[in-house]
Image 1 (cartoon, one colour):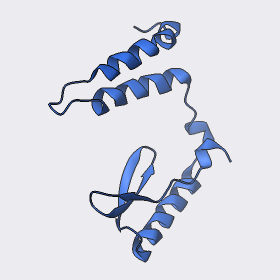
Image 2 (cartoon, one colour):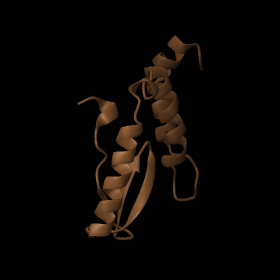
Image 3 (spheres, one colour):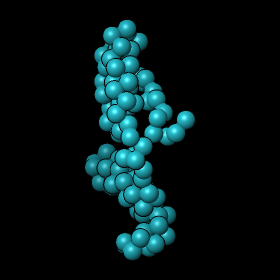
Image 4 (cartoon, helix red, strand yellow):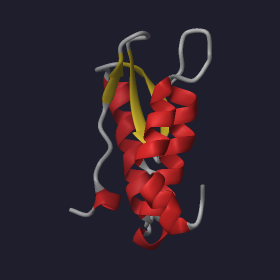
Length: 105
């Protein structure tokens, strides 16, 4: 099965007890976890997503992925006071060979 056609997981969001599904990087909450209604909503969303998929539109290069990851890391890896952790800089250093091959800092 190709990466673009993998079925997203039906997941539990523990803090709220809700079911959720992550499609194209966006979480959608489906109602109380385990209920027939949440599973039905899940199936509808996944079916619609799978039918709309076009493999030509999901291809990412390593360069794209590295830049997207760094953008994510800047917002995710933070201390409680909101400042960036050292992890972001570590990722940037680790990805330096990728960026230099792209002509970016």
